[in-house]
Image (cartoon, rainbow, N blue to C red):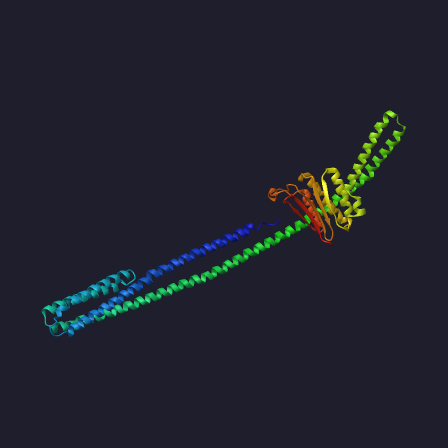
Length: 431
């Protein structure tokens, strides 16, 4: 007994689906990680870098303002620079606030505290300078700027530059991390593709192997069925031949002897019994004719003696007489030459087709065509036919199956059409 491959094929499909789902989950998770890296690091670093550049610009503007204050002479007092310094301070405070929000959680706390402390010291020194500009001479203010404010500005500018370099380094690392995620996804894609191809090839090979075994078994069963059908047909023909011979030899002789005895009895019987004996003799004669006709139908001797064409014409006459159905017959110009062992199958197909028309078609006329080279037999009627969907789910008729088997024995084809009536066509190639 061959095990069904359904379980193994189902297991292969389940494993393939599990791998596909696992890879889909992994890919989605990798894409999520990549999006987090891109939005959480790269984008924020770029925004923070813009703010650091803004801070550098404001520090440079403050340094230029302080230099202009030192170079100022004449009527423009140092205290008049307070408004410009205030605007620069507002811009720097806003840039520091935005940059601190973008760098929150990613910058070293000590570094953040140092940056905040440095700016507080700077603004404390600027406020002191403003007071000195109102109360002390310009020389003292200039000395304070050179000794205190300019070193603080230089330190803050250097710190902003270091933070900008650090930001760029973090952005580069984030880019490398994203590239690593891309590479990991690509590698796993190749692995998944390889596993999928391996599984697909395994499942396909299993299906091919199972189908090959199944088709081999079907071919073996088909050959066995064909051999059995041929044996059954041969046994059927042998049985019909034996029955025909018994009918012709045994019952025919018995009925002939009874007829002869009735004839002799009629010549010596009283006149009162003569009519009854005559009627009995007629009945015996009719029975003898029916037995001979049945014997011919079971195993037509005319088929062996005169060939297929004569046997067909004889049977069509018998069919018309028995069923009352008219037959329009078109035969070949020359009688087809076919050995009796093959001709009997054509004759049986004709019998079965006409019997089906008589039982199911409900018509008063059928058409029979016989052609030669190649041999073609067609039986057609104008009955209602049958719908193929009406035969769905039903076992095929024994008669139709027998006709197909006989056509296979002949090496021919049997075609059954049921559109506007029923047409049964047998085609047998020569040789």
